[in-house]
Image (cartoon, rainbow, N blue to C red):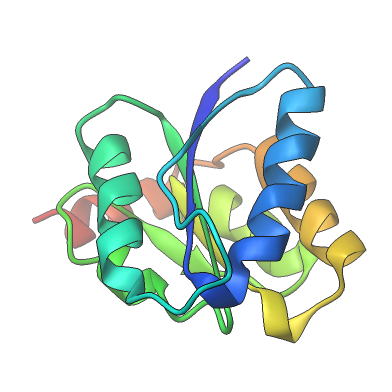
Length: 142
């Protein structure tokens, strides 16, 4: 199975722990880039570290958990990262099928714990469809 980089800010700390435990229970290696408490922090420090690990090939996939999911803006600043904000199973599946997204961002304040886990499972089980979608990804990377 694959390995995953994970990071959160204080607003995503609780769900990050839930997702990390779920992934590890499935035999997936997870590297946690923080934060390590619910104390207020600035999300760019933690998101950037996880995204850098994915961009440099240390982990093929990454997950960001914040209050809204919009913390993805930091990850998407790194070359080679395609991080989608996902809010249900359909958007998670399409992020992989159409965008070959190597990272997703989840908003803890936007969904239930069960929904967050279901989203991650859907994303991990989805497969990139290639074809016209690959052309689009190539254009992103130009």
